[in-house]
Structure formats: structure tokens, C-alpha cells
Amino acid sequence: MTDLNSYEEFLTSLSQVSSFAFDIWNGLQPPNLNKRDRSYDTPIREMVSVIMNRNTFQHVFLKKGYAVFGVPLKDGETAVASLIAHGPVKDGAREIKKVQTFLSHLARLIEGNWVSQKETEEMAEELAQSFESLCLYSQISTQMKMLRFSGDQLKDLLHNLIETMRVDMIFAWMPRYPKYDTVIINETAAQLISDNQNFHMKVIKQIPLDGPESQEDYFMVNNSKSLPGFAELHPEPYRFLSVKVTHQGILYGLLGLVGFNVEEIFRQGELRLLSSIAEQLAMVITNSELYGDMERFVMNVVRSLVYAIEAKDYYIKGHSERVNRYCMMMADRLKMDQTEREHLHWASILHDVGKIGIPEVILNKPEFLDQEEYGLIKNHPQKGFEILQPIEQLSGSLPGVLHHHERVDGKGYPFGLAGEEIPLLARIIAIADTFDALTTDRAYRSAITAQAALDIMQEVAGEQLDRSLFEIFKNSIKESW
Ligand SMILES: [Fe+2]
Image (cartoon, rainbow, N blue to C red; front, side, top):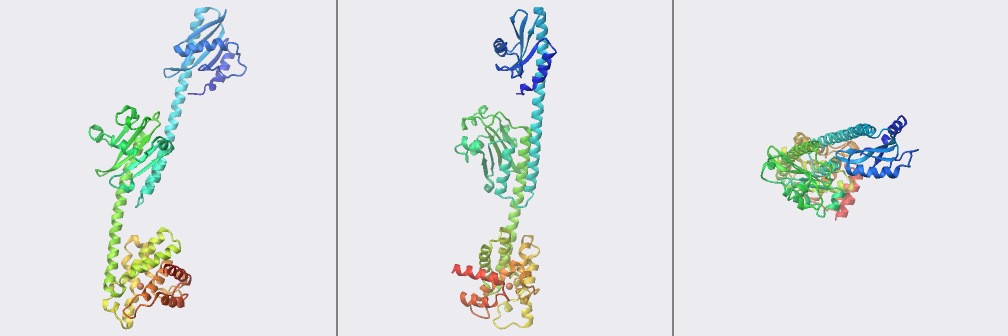
């Protein structure tokens, strides 16, 4: 209710220009005014109690020629305070009527003022909420524009939403894509619901599957006590809103809210916001799944490429996989971030993909190669780069493929880059590649032991291989023995 003290100044000045004194009593509480005559508090309190009970105008004569008048101040139909006037009266009945009329007018004015204040507050609150919803929605839209949408991102999104929507529980139930199943609860819900991970499922089961509701895109209960089935699920009344997450007529699941603050209701704005989010969510899940399918498809093609080369070259069977394993060991040591790791992962698997165009007789030739044959072999990093370049998902891996035969002394190929000019991925692959080449049988020589390989590599560290990366490799490979 409005602060009654805000009328203090007005009533004081009214008292100053009139023979009456004016007060507002909050329930049976006398007003807390300075310099106020308190001598009539007791009889006024008695009258105020009658006003509050009967909800009508009252008056009483305290002594000859002195009376107290009062009308209720109502919030809707309920008396919440009393507007009091007291002072000297001369001519009985006529004066009583006049004071009653004046007090009633004044009471209507004050009540009208309360109503408009309340409306203003509500409007401001609604505006604030719309603004909040708008901000959230724009944030969500940005998040959802991403090609890959994860369960964790959905969790973040719902965490934001639970506050904006002023509810105690929010969930995404996606039987079609269970990895997006999410339940977020706040402290209130955690205290009220013992099986909070299952409560939403019980509520979902109560949604009527036939009848007009099932045709709607949403289901709403503003007080569980009003609906059998929902009422039995929790002794406390709660409100529930769910919207369908659908895409092109296919139902993915539901997005839902549960609130134990039943003095609030779900408004149209909230329904609209949740529906738009559900719509976006369906779209982003569809896109993300499609993108995932596409990515899996591309990566399977890539894997087939690797098998194709390994099938051509008898001696390098399993080479890509082993080089990949050594590289990932290095990634751990170097504490690479996820993106960098992924680039290295694919670059190490695919580094020799360019060998696909080299005739098998050259690849498997045990004798020395002539200049032309060696030229073909030396062309494989460039060839590999060209094969993979159109695959967008592999763009970060290309430097590893193109430069894995560069040497830190600048005598490598294809560009003769030196030192740190050579991309990190390529310097790592070069080490893993050399180690695997030495420790496995080749067409032109047999495998040597790991220790012997490390000894040879130690000699060329700083010329052919990056010295500090080699040290890291040596230490971690020894630990793995
Ligand atoms: Fe190579």
C-alpha cells in the first residue's frame, strides 16, 4: 500500500486553514505527526475501530460542541486506513452531513491517487521486465546464432531465464535430444521439492494429452490448487507454464517454468518470451544437429582419405594414428587449449594426405629415389594442403600439413622456413613424424629402437627439429615407457 506519511504535509496545511484537524490512521495506529494534539487519541481509536469494521462513515461527539468524524480509506473493497477530522461543531445534523460529504470526496481523491500510483508502479515494473526480457532475448539470439549449440550453453541460458522470469524452477525436457535435458532450480525450490530432478516429470505427466489443450503450443496453470492432478503433486500451491519445442511439425520436447510465488501469475509477455525462446531453441538444435552430421560426414571422408593413403603405402600403416598419439601427448605437455588441440589432432592425422597422388611404386621403393621421384615425394605437403583447403572445418590444421617437412635451420621444404617462422603445429608434427619413421620398418631400412631414435634426433635437434620441443618430447616419451 501507499505510504500514508506522504499525505502528512497536505493534511497539516489543510488543518491550518480549517477549524478541523485532519489525520490518517493506519489501522488502529495513530498518525506519527509532530506537534499533534494527542488528547483525543483514545476516543478516536475507538471510532476508528468501528470505521474499519463497518467500512462506513462514523462520527461521535466527544463533548458539547466538539466532534470526531471519519471515513474508511479503501484498497478495493477493504478498509485499510481511516481519514479522520475533528473539531468544533455548531449546528449538529447539517454540519455532520457537510463534513461527511467533504471527507468522502477527500477519501475518493486519496484512493484515486493510490490507484494511479499503483498503476504507475506496475507499469514501470512491466516496462522494466519487458526491457529485461528484451536484453535476455537479444543475448539468447546472439548465442543461438552459433553453429554448434551445447547442453552447457542451454544451461547458461536457463540460468539467466530463471531470474528474469521470477520462477523457482526451469527445465528443458527433450526426449528427442536427451543431451539437452536440463533442470535448474533455485534455493526456494531446493528446499520445497525433495525430488527436484523428477518433480518436473511428474508435472509434465499431468498435462492433458487429449482435449483442446493438447492442440495448444503451451500449457498454463496459475495455481495448482485449481487443477486436480497438479494439486496432489505438492502441498504448496505452485504455478506452471510449459511451451512446446517444435520444428517443422516435429515435437522435440518442452520448455517449462515452475513458481511457488502464486501471488504472481504468468503474463502474456512471459508466455511470448518463452515461446520465442522455444522456437529459437528448436531451430538452433536442428542447425546444430545438421552441422554435427555434416561435420561427422566430412570427418569420415577425411578418415577414408587417410585409410586410402595408408593402403597404398604398406610401410606406413598406422603411421598417422601413431603420429597423432605422439602429438596429443605433446599437446598435453604444452597445455594447449581445446581449439589448438583440435587443429593439431587433424593436422597430425592428415599430414601425409598429399601422398595420395604419388604412385605406389615410388612410395614402396626400397632403393634410392631419382630426382624426379624425390620431387614427387617433396610435393606431398603442398598437395595435402590443396586437398584439404576446401574443407572449412580444417582451416586451422592446414599450417601443420603444409609445413611438416620444414627444418628449423631453414633447409626443409616446401618453403625453407626457419625457427619460429615454422608454425608450432608443424614443428610438433615433424618431431612425432621423425620418431615414428625411425621406430618402424620402412621400404628402405628396418626399425631402430626408441632409445636409438631419440639419440639420432638429439643430434639433429636445433638443425632439423625444434630443440626445446624435442626436449619436451623426449621427456614425455621416456615417462611413457
Ligand atoms: Fe610427410
